[in-house]
Length: 162
Image 1 (cartoon, helix red, strand yellow):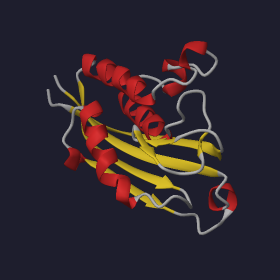
Image 2 (cartoon, rainbow, N blue to C red; image 1 turned 90 degrees about the vertical axis):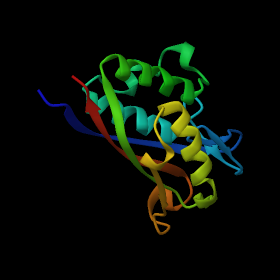
Image 3 (cartoon, rainbow, N blue to C red; image 1 turned 120 degrees about the vertical axis):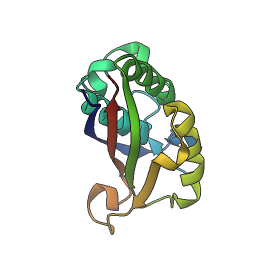
Image 4 (cartoon, rainbow, N blue to C red; image 1 turned 90 degrees about the horizontal axis):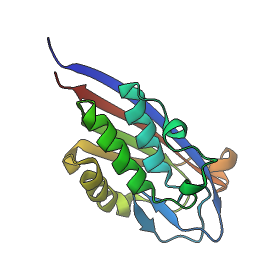
């Protein structure tokens, strides 16, 4: 029997607020606004988690880390992602590649791609060259375009070993 390949998608959106750090891919990015959320608000990691869980049919981020559970208040999303990696590895799944798009007006993120990819490669236990991070704007349209929010879309290709 051959190995199974599956694709999963993940999406997350958070409001940008004063008084919170901006953390994406486990990296602190200097900015005057940060992501509002129960945990540290890392929308990139949250979307990766949902993509991995979706591809493996293991639920979603809310099932694994309920928003109403106080133990996840201000949680480090990188640690949550590590737990998901343990879970998918136990089920004999491995990541083939990750492709992500961060949608925001500010800050410009291209200078942070390499650092985010390096950090994620350590957490995900995959080579950096299998992780793609891009950023787009909304051309000043809607909540994202006005600078009130940031969104992330992720696609993950997963392979299950026999």
